[in-house]
Image 1 (spheres, one colour):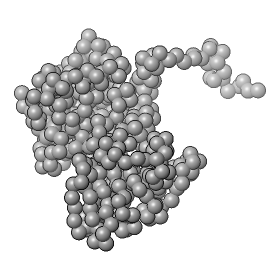
Image 2 (image 1 turned 90 degrees about the vertical axis):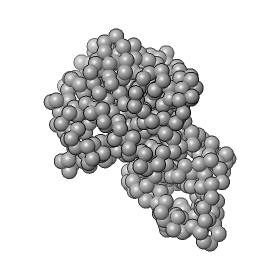
Image 3 (image 1 turned 135 degrees about the horizontal axis):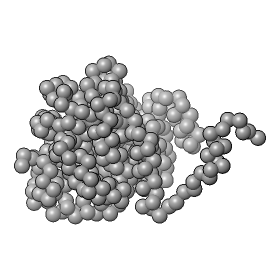
Length: 418
């Protein structure tokens, strides 16, 4: 079996971590049993470009149990947990092409190796797989039925492709499902980002000024958790509505240029490039910590930081200290990549349970619907979103009310008022 992993000897450790994650993924476990019985994905070839974690491994297992022929590569050079590819290759016979710390050339070679199986479905996190397919492997496009996209950054890229008329097959925006972005993006990113920063630095957050660039769902989660740890949180935004929301949530809001000399820790989570730039680095205090939780490291203008620096050294795992020519030091975490996956383990399995349930059920839905869909980006069907929420509540031992017949009639009848 073709694959590229770091160390096959890590397989036993990876299997244990997969089992541990599965305990907190009851919705996906139920889907596994259904898929194993019904085999709804029989004969489907899936190329997946995702963060290679223990939670992702359980999704891959579900897809294979459903009958799919799956290949997996990493969607970020630093997000792979090397024991997981080993376990997938040895125990599940799933070809994986992923190495933690792989260079740029290896990263894109792995994407091409996943595509060599000529997939009928793509499963992406950041849209690099789709981008490569549309640029370097156009010969595959006629055979691809549809795809899914996991993250905000990827959805932005794909909607741009659809707007320009270059997207060649329909894609479901898993990121936009309520059971994904309301929970994964907010609670998952909030907890795992702080986990990554603390593992990398071991700083005390209490009393520090923590700058959050971007107040979308991910930014909301980070701000909430940082404040809970005692940090003074300052939000920067370009969207006036989100800025008002941040103010009313109790945060100070200001432009990055004003926040730069105040911050002890800076965290970008916007989906855009050069959010922290040369003029901001020049104003930062000695010892400032800069990290990113957006999908790509372009949110921090690293070339600009390097141009201002007279020297660089690795002072801790995942911490590069840049000494500016005026003697001030700026600490960049995880090479500017997703700090929650570069220095930690990513989102907890409990929240990824819903995200990956959306992936699995969206693929099944696409097999029956894709041929009638335009070449655009679509939301997860409402019935799938609500089914996943109901299953998650049931797994937590939580029940909700149901509408009575009279309530249903009232909601459907415009004539009844006061």
